[in-house]
Length: 360
Ligand SMILES: [Zn+2]
Image 1: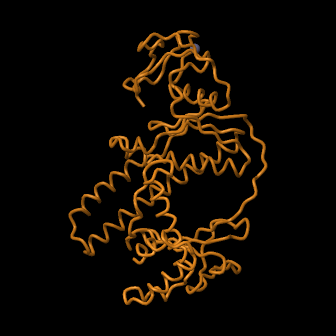
Image 2 (image 1 turned 135 degrees about the vertical axis):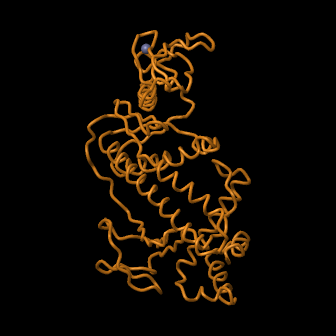
Image 3 (image 1 turned 30 degrees about the vertical axis):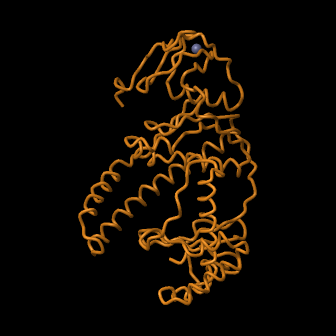
């Protein structure tokens, strides 16, 4: 599209707004982009502005000005991928249960909830399955409710999605059946000629399955995060190196399906909404190497070790629950002074159970 062109001019041009208008006006004059006149200017301006931000982030990342992992350059958008158009104030209005969109007209959505305040923007999203959604940006006031408990530490894992410091566990829904179907269809897709009707049909089938997984996961994560945030005054998670872990190909599929990052984002947003403390502790905290009862440090445990007995105080621990308790302690500042009496490389805890004798 015209977006590459304008990003270059954006970088050299300080008067961004004028520049965006110019880029769009110029683009409309060409034959291939005539269709741009048929749609509202507002989403076009938004797209150009978004691209400007994407390029700024990309160049900042290249220069090392931006924290986090290296960003790739913005990519051209495919027509078959998800499409979106954002309307700012002036480009949309709400009358009753209808939404007016500039140059599109009135649409009547199925409302999932009542809007808590007047929205500042609306994004129209068309997903790969050709479903349309409206997403509104609204301001909300923090809700004041009392929490039952002071704090909760959460250990996120692959086998069990979340183990809490109060001993509760949350199992993630089983996506393996849908995932297997997707993999099968992806193999089928690879063998079908590009541009064929059959290939398009397979593509939509795959998109539908992906949506099903995403919807199930979203539902699960929303319910869990609401429960956790409403019941506890402080919520503590461990910072996981998700992008580093996804590089491990064996783990990648399981991890991306789990949605750890999504869970963290939800917890953070809901903590703000409910006036809770949300805390993320460093991933380098040795949360699985310390006894949460007495603070004794037994050292590294193999990944297969599921339960241990502390040789200092005799307490038997489930590995993940012990980690969750330590996450809670570190997050609330109630950390034991760990006794570094352990001998080099020798774990001073008795292994009670490993994952091979786990029959679940
Ligand atoms: Zn102990």
